[in-house]
Amino acid sequence: MLRAYAALVLLGIIWGSNFIYMKWATALISPAQTVFMRIFFAFIPLLIVALYTGSISLKQLRYLKHFVVMSVLAAILYYYGIVAGTALLPSSIAGLLSGIIPIFTLLAALIFLREDRLSLGVIMGIVLSFSGIILSARPWESSEFISLMGIFWVMVGSLSFGISFVYARYYLLPLEIPSIALATWQLGIAVLILILFIDFKGITTIYSDTHVLLGTIIGLGVMGTGGAFLLYYYIIQKLGAVKASVATYIAPVIAVIIGAVMGENVTAIEWFALTLIIGGVIVIQTTKLG
Image 1 (cartoon, rainbow, N blue to C red):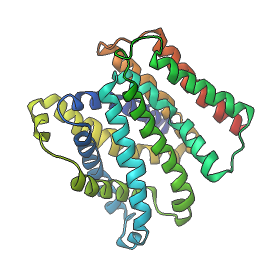
Image 2: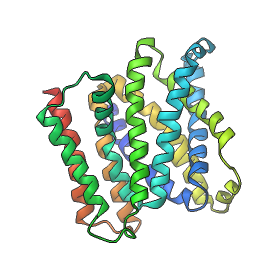
Image 3: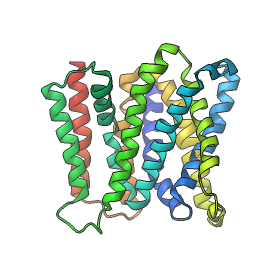
Image 4: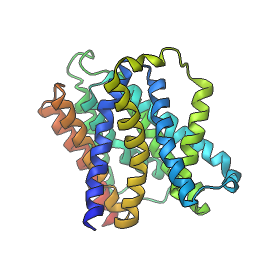
């Protein structure tokens, strides 16, 4: 059990560290190229584990249309939104904004599944979290300080990821496909789609900085995405989905701390905004569990 809780903390740290790796990578290559490298190097360890455990098979291709939708929603749009937003924002701001993902998941469930009721507690949680977003945008200051387009892209990525949860719950959960197989198909198809549509010109520029190259391949790809998938499924198996969700609270905190250590201008406003966002999520989950 102690090992599972240690894995939970490690997952939060890994997720929180991803933002600084994205920031470094997008200083040398485009957001789309960064997304490709992230997904490609995450796909490799997942494929190895899926083949080793026998979780993946060609018979699963009968559900190809669902895998394609998940590839677009939970990989391409999600990662591009987060990476493009991080390129325009301080990594600490992008990290704290990512804490809104559970809110978008809830909103998508309310709209498309109509299973959860919009109670007073849920409304309060949504208001708290979006107040944190508005506060982090600093609307009273010049737009040069915080990029509104950066915030927009993070919101697009978060919304896409939230919708993907609802899609998976409605279409894929009844199929009982192993999680590792779904993740492998999802990322593998995303790699193929990106190869067809993105411009690779200038991607080799990242080789000019070994530190950034290794951070992107190992930190963001292999560990930050591929390894994180495996850790997340391990934690769900050992502790359950509710406790596993605690990692989503740890990640924004880690992102803000790393941003501060790296010299970004992290003030009391950012910490208060983070508190509002995470507080809103906690209020909603407490209300639903109650």
